Length: 183
Image (cartoon, rainbow, N blue to C red; front, side):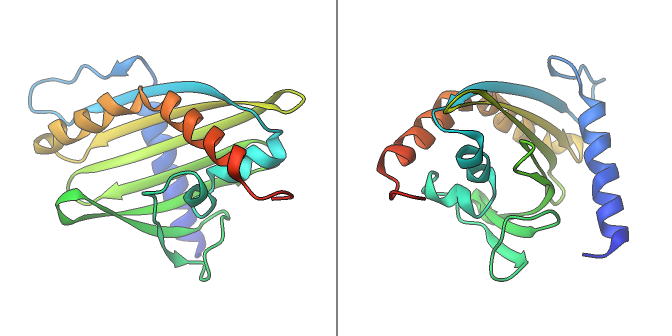
């Protein structure tokens, strides 16, 4: 991926993250684009070396059955810094995602995605081995409407974000109990 694109995405991720560091949503004047901030925490009953890769776009498929990223780069799909993929959303909208952090050993995974004319999103995931065989996960969602007309769309996603922790924890636990040995 060229350096200009990586620098631009990194700056955009920083702007998204810093713009809404607060509770829930920013109080914006009438007619302004909405910005939201939500976070959740949960535990994965596995060491970080097993848990962290599950938050890569390609590997997430093993625990999230409706998740089907279409990789643009790299091909074949690989969870790495700068990976670009697309996700189809209801209503025929398509989001372009970029993996802006992929430090599985250090416990940091991050994505930025954009739905044109609607929303920009930063998803920042931090993992920490809490004890032997248990990894704590902290997920932050920053969402920004790209125009005021998309505020309801952003709010719909934001309302769901804060409640996702138990769903993710359960889905990952279900996968880990049925995964093949030595995986």
